[in-house]
Image 1 (cartoon, rainbow, N blue to C red):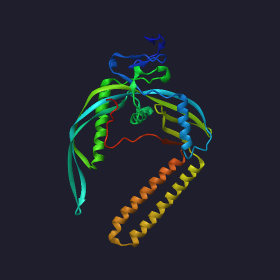
Image 2 (cartoon, rainbow, N blue to C red):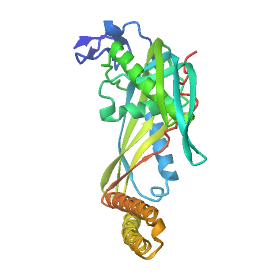
Image 3 (cartoon, rainbow, N blue to C red):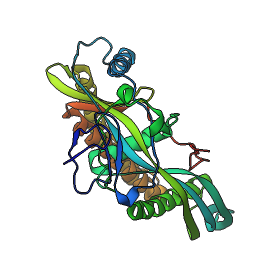
Image 4 (cartoon, rainbow, N blue to C red):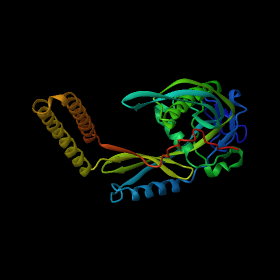
Length: 333
């Protein structure tokens, strides 16, 4: 515990916290490990605007728009991200298998890699355990413009700031690991490759800043149960929402599970008829098709049965999918 250098308020700091912001005046207190890393922020909207965004989402939802609910609490925090400006140079080589004249051939292809842009990494070691990693990246993928922390009026955007406990060397390692994995997956998808046989890429981190993203949690009560809604506070927009499972949804899942179970039996009966009473020349192919259809129906029935006993639906509302051709997003000029 120490006093703020600006306003003198008491500040409690965890031993592994690398960045502390005074909750009263917004004074930034960085540790010596990240003292030269700039801090930017996506200023949060007001609490009332967050509540309005939740009401608008409920009004557009087919299951919730006619249901009565009450909002119990609205809490917001800033989730810290390292936004790294990275340049990647390298090359890859791989092949795609195609069938030509009843033969499987390999079509080889290779290109160089030369890309640059901004790549986010959660600034907390255990962010993914609490779901902050995916939500932080969802915020990053939205069209939000960060501003330097010194240019905002803290009183208009004050929220608690989650601790930054990921050091810069650990951030470098995560950039190299996560970015190269994502780049390899994108190469496979864009070029429709069967496999990559050569992949050489070297990421170079040219600069970085810490970005504080506003994330609000709204808890509401409906049908006697408590449910949560995650809201990105910059625009604001609902990222994900928990909803109760209503009676008509349970009936639909029960009927679907029952119908799929019956379908499994019918598929088995048709398969038995084809195997033993049909043309023996095609019995092998028919048997494989029947087995595949039975397994698919059984898996769908199991999935529906699992949903039938669930009491909560979780819906992703506004998460924007990244563009296939742009793996890095340029935020800062």
